[in-house]
Image 1: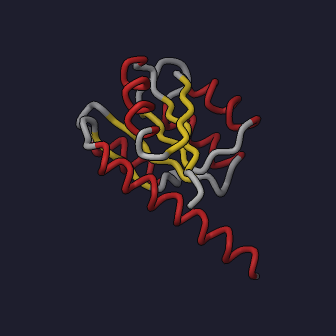
Image 2: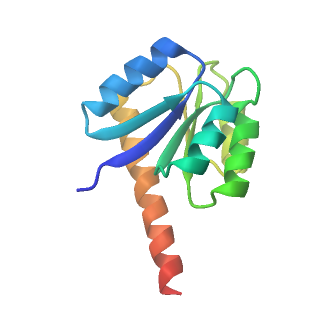
Length: 132
């Protein structure tokens, strides 16, 4: 089975270190950046399967970053993260094309299940388009 490649975008350095360590142990290739601008630059140079994107960040917000991802990388699935207990931000992300959202704190297994589902969703969509 091919390892899933993800990009995690969050301005909390300790969170990024923890999530990278925990997902890497579960056979996921994890890259991290701390803001939306760096995420867009990274994605322009490096293919990934799924983006995990924090909603609230300084500079380019997660919602604005999602809008740019939708414009530039139409097949890339995005899972929005919010640590502020607001489902409204997650719903806004879904309405803008995010695959899913998850509230912090969360279990790593729950996140991994959502990453796998998002990856499979993108794979099937790309296959269907290729068959048309």
